[in-house]
Image (cartoon, rainbow, N blue to C red; front, side):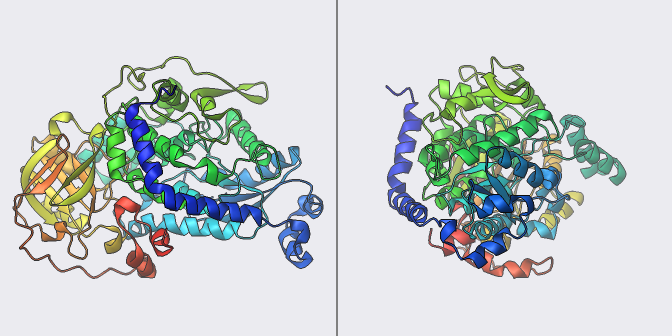
Length: 603
């Protein structure tokens, strides 16, 4: 008899039922692709010569079709700290492949932009759409039909969802994600936040701010706060697409390298020609998608995944929406508090038990699906353990109890009873509210609106003292079709200062806030977006707005039915933004994933 929570079971069944036509079509597609997978012995010698010419010492193995050939999709660059370690990965992964009679080739590369670098800058308007470029780049890399599986090298915000979306179009192949791990911890998060707010108030110099930021972001590896990048790694564990426990092992360690080796050996073993075939498209099913959502809720993960989960789910023919996320949130307890929702970072989280502890607790409480087809031998139960080095080999052991109950708690004694990702609705549309990051006394805000169309205008009003009052700041024309749906993280310090001064403050926007945001109550991803006459385009300064996470309300007393929408702004150019006009035109709504590629493909 199943011990699954009844709500989890009900939501999963609802997702299965509404996904049936699209999921069946997807499974039919990957079955056809598997049936016609090219036998390289039948491929033109000229084609093969082009593919093998650069393979050097692997040429003979490729010529004789000696074993599986693994395609590496890498998002290496050395501007992005999380992806800098990937520079030397291909040569190591090729050595690991040879150990089991396989070969590996870099099939292609993807862009990997950093939201931390582009926050508040024009380049941020390309950020969300970079996910779809990454998906297309992955597709191009795997389209050479030379591969029996893939290793996906990516960590950060849009990179992992994009890699997954692209790889799912080749869902007849097995695939394993290979993270590189977080950088060591720097200065305390409390100190970093204090300096940011002092700078926003003009009480710290730019040099003091830069020194503080460099004390936090200081070496290769993922940023250590629990934002979108680290939420990505959590989800890959929850979906069974990593080697178990791979998420938060630091770069350059022996265990990190041993885990990479395990990933290569495993993807070589689960291909079409073996007796343990585990194609990506079968691994990523409705239950795996629900597990990703559960993990997001249980760990207080990034709100960006309210967009990314629906997008990569659609790429596998699975339909999930914010009603599903909100209903799951009502029963999934918050098991962890990682900065910005707590004091410690992901390294402290890992030391306290990490994902092994979270998954063990969720499976034990019937709050996650244990029967997902993971890439690991042994299934999802293996993800409830922790890896360690037994000599030179990786082994897995019981994770034990939480090592820090200020960081991790059992499902029976959580930080709060629900997952803290709430749907708010009303005559202003539908939006997401991350209640796990906000003090409960601020879950309800009712105040007059002050309306803006840019982050810069909010900053100017703050500096001029125009926001020193109870206020709901509305930042509109930030949706996917308006300007690519940038993150508005630079608003956080100013709004946090207003809140600390004792004012009742909230943010409503059709843009995004990152996993690094918290503290200020916010209704984000508001849909319909303002562009084209959405409700936010009809709000005027002074309109009374009510935002309430408890009742799920997002409304105004103003008569929006009879009011004309303000004019749509012209799209801005520069920094290459004009080259993404097609993406803006075809992007669908945030709740569907804001994907121009999936929308244009009719998926």
